[in-house]
Image 1 (cartoon, rainbow, N blue to C red):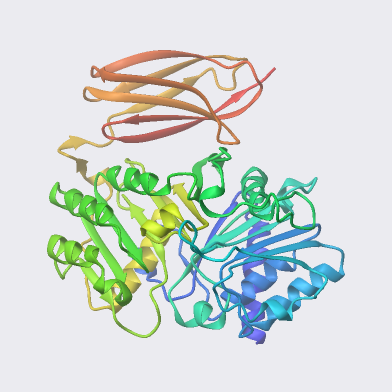
Image 2 (cartoon, rainbow, N blue to C red):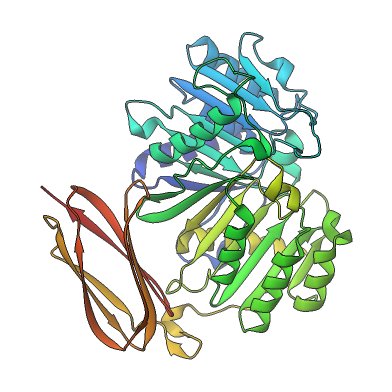
Length: 467
């Protein structure tokens, strides 16, 4: 126990020292840091549950929990939640109707709880696994979201294969809280069953894009947000390589699209849990990728991850990670309550790749090392020939975007504020090679992200607008 507590203390102290590191990624199974590109993935050796407890202990004002399955096998979470309630934290908890939630009776009976509706023709399960801490605090650094693939029980923490993402960002925390409130039916401490909405009765609340640590982060909630279309868009964005790890996979369209990308020259590899071996995507992937690139997880523990990694080897493209509670099933897309994150970041892509690499090789597979774009090219075109300059920077509002293309290309330039809201967008379907200018006018002071996408990848620049 002493060793585990020491590890948790190191994790939380690290979060305070690295003040600009607002996103943290945790894996509950060994990772392979030999494929690290400078930042090593964090393996929580039987400590994922303790890490959740450590974050709960940070709550000062509010604690909103929406978890599909919490069992009495890990009572420390209930102890921490009860302690938070006793020190004045406003606690609300949503749990699934159909799941074996034996941990709920361990909570203080005065804590308000809401059970999801009975499953029916148009509703299946409340499958989220997220927690929102201090979303409305006057100190924005207090606001934290915990999410990922893991349910809250000892088997999921220690035996099954899972990942967790923790984000310290108040606008994102408010977006998660708004979604929680829609299920809760109220913004207050007590649920309102008359206004409570689950499944396909929910609506798209917007507010999907955020800039966190200079990285674009998207969040979507099923079923209102059309999440599988976002998954297909992420698959289609791959230029070089793509990896997936899935617990339950039933959508043929996703499998066929990955095979199509593989046939077009993208390096594709993946893992499916053995429970999905009877589903039709298994046959599509097995025949389309072959046994060297497609593995069925047939060893101890459920492969419970739900992630996609795109262009981990290609920082000149748009490397991203897609993860959350959403399996690739029709129910997840159209009936369940789910949440999905898409994080556009080459470091995040590599961290998940370190985990995937360890999982894949554990199953007897091997993966080809793909050189990064600095030593490679995309579709035969130099991958480092497009440049973007923003000046003056800082600016009082009138900004020139100077971009240089090595070859003719489509060009998309989008400007976002730090809350992730799109401010301006510029599209040109055919721009010749060479140097070009685009004038941008922003009148509201603040920090902005300018994102240029061409046929060869993505370039991001931060812009400061002053009075």
